[in-house]
Length: 241
Ligand code: ZN
Image (cartoon, rainbow, N blue to C red; front, top):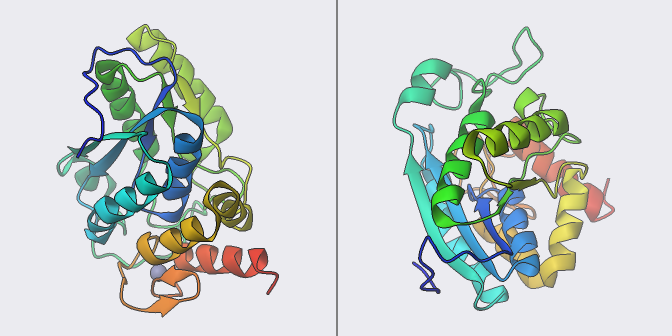
């Protein structure tokens, strides 16, 4: 659904494409972009995730956030990457394997190079849509060891995309140096309690796809690595830890 009738060739200088998965981080990034830029589009990826709950969370959450920043939210795109990532990864996020830490010190949910793939697709889409800024919620501070979330990786990707596509994209990472507590604080700063509540009730982070068990910090199993991070960040932000 689009609130705007921009065509792909309407070059809006201050426009952004947000990688929006429906999780806490990307939802906060969407609010961050909407506060800054007059025109924002979103992109999500279907790649054989174990749980489609992430994708079903996106539309209502997106609509709620859009209403907090009226007139700025444009088209949503969902790109189906098919089974290729799942076939290559064969990891816990895309198969029924158990989530654990691997010998490399990475959670078994790691899909090698996933964010590189996402950024490449996002840049190709941004090119077509005439959008200059690409916003992603990757984070080096609280990160689970994903090397493709590192600041150096993102800077290198920006350079590669700009050379390869002959554009001047800016890849923005508002959460890069924020931990989960600071991410909750950022949401409050951007949209007050209304935004925090939207994220708590509407976003999804749980690796196990549990969207029925409710906690102060939102829905989730409460024990997987994603729930543990989200809960710990909430408690720290609330001064409970
Ligand atoms: Zn969980």
